[in-house]
Length: 311
Image (cartoon, rainbow, N blue to C red; front, top):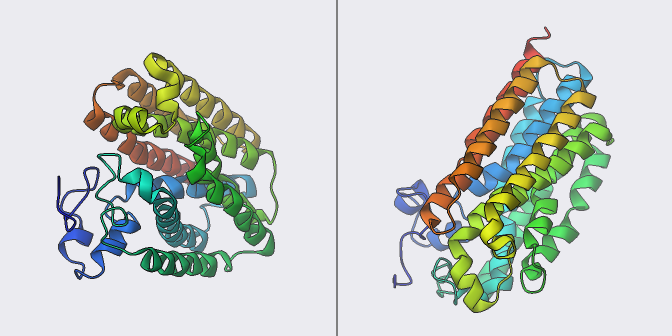
């Protein structure tokens, strides 16, 4: 077992600047916010950027609003950190029983409960400052997600598919980009949200394969356990729904061939993930999970090019 001062957790990026350069007193808080695991905020950010790009196409703009995209980036980092801190406060006792999580700052004693609560408040205030830069409708839309975020950590105790609730929270950005651009929501945004939820359920099922044995011992429920031997089929269904919903969203937003070409490549990548799933390979599951960043960025780039090619 690693000592409480261990430099990183098993699924952290090796050699990350937070481990190498941050002052010692700050390192536990940066780990609490998962700064050394940037894939989380990337996956929270990408639906925001997809939504902003889709809104630009629908509005006849050459590109998504750069200020909105920058604000979404800051907000994603802050709110992912706040969500992880809140999750760790709620799960601190469960985390001591799971190999991958027992060296997190709270269960290992590197951060106190009071310190974690203070840090959570700080991150939430940063997120609020970002949210207040948008129009009133977007502000209200953002605040409406807080109830789902608050509910998620408890779901794994009694709901076999907590990834659905995670999807409702993590895909919320699919509504935010459109709301920030138009001050309202319409069919493309809701369809994009539906597709993003299915994407989250799919990739987080793959992620949950890392913990499936510990989860069975502790009694934590997950979609990976629910699907069991049929996990590949379960993820395939989620990813198929992702492509179907995104296709409809693109159609109603007026996306042209470039955006649909990007969606085709995105779909092929999801299919590649499904083909590579191995319930016994936790390290491989982590690699597949992380690959969704590149897939999501490719889709965003295709939507931006779709806008640019119209001018």
